[in-house]
Image 1: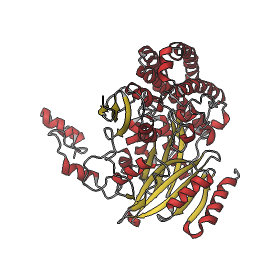
Image 2: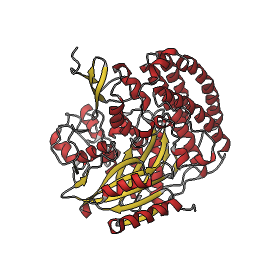
Image 3: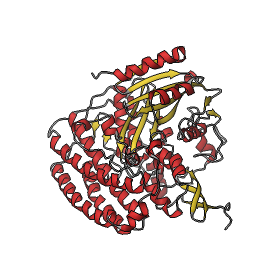
Image 4: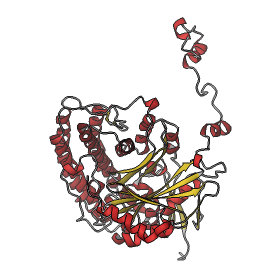
Length: 370
Length: 192
């Protein structure tokens, strides 16, 4: 084979690396990638434009649909952005419930990731287990909010309804069960030589460049940099619970990112237990908003962010003083991870590892295209 | 009220260094600083904040269309990983001749944001390498995120409704027509 000769391969728009549709155009020599180019545009739904024509409450039903695997950070961001512009207070209990929902969402998102990450390394059993176990968390969501995937639960002023009777004990039961199951996942996934060999040294991000390149979330912590919005800029009551942010996994490859997530899912279980302890039993859960058709926000803007399972999830909310948002800009972590970062780190990798790397970065096309 | 030591430092240092080139600088709240400058100085302000002040992380670049004031407002949001402060830098761009400098040599990920803004708002970034379209393909209409782009009109001009699926039809009347039933008297006042 002549050295300079390259072949073009189109990976996607449908493929196992990610949840959603996105295409990566690869130039390969043999099976080594020499150039990668991300093409998006298969999933654009124009949410940001749509929200400019809706009132503030109608927009609330749209935001959760921006990201399929983890819709709750969207709801929480939107609600907090609106509250910041308006100066609306949120009842104490509602803020604890929001944290509970966010952490449950993180757990179910990581369980889905377990399936994707192990599946892209050829270990299909784990995916069956973790997606099965994820259903227990979705059951809790169904009981609490009425929806399994899209919840439309966290809204401006608080949350939509109080916890059902006995809900706390059912959450605690699921957490106990999941904690036991995580050890099983360790045995079949992290102790597995196939998984270790496929992930160690693959998809390297230079740690000294990571912040500059816009890396956030588990990939940044996998580079040994302690960064977490929950610690850096505590929202809700994250300053009142104790948890650790990992910085000991610093090899900055797919393996390190997997270990970070493995560590964090246990931390989330720990946080949920603290939330259940500290949450007040009684009290209002919603600071009532005015008639939505006449609900005007003062002119202003706010940038709010949460730590989603994939990293910093930001909302830039702008109000022009009318009943409609002037602009809502969604900053998803995948917007950077899936395009500029992926194009950089795929160079020199093997074709077979593309899905593995994409999954470890948490590439999620719905939040790139909004 | 938390003390805003670093937030005030940013405002003072930037004001002192850039003097009149900074139109406005203020602390919005804890961890939020807002600066306003113009397109001529935005590159030097961003470079100063990144290299001298340590705002290493570019969170995003956003754009707001203030059509009644005939301007686009570009918003650059930076984050300081050590001091934990976000700074919002706002720049006005003329709506009739929307040109702004390209900053993808400062942060590589700015490239994607600029490509999107070029497509969705029609803002030209000087020196942005013309790669393929990001989201829209073969788009020759008005950039769709502008306020004067009429979504409904675009749909009416470019698409047709399937017969029987016309928009905004009265459900009760349609069913009555199909089945040949009479609309009950009490329901007639709700029908259109």
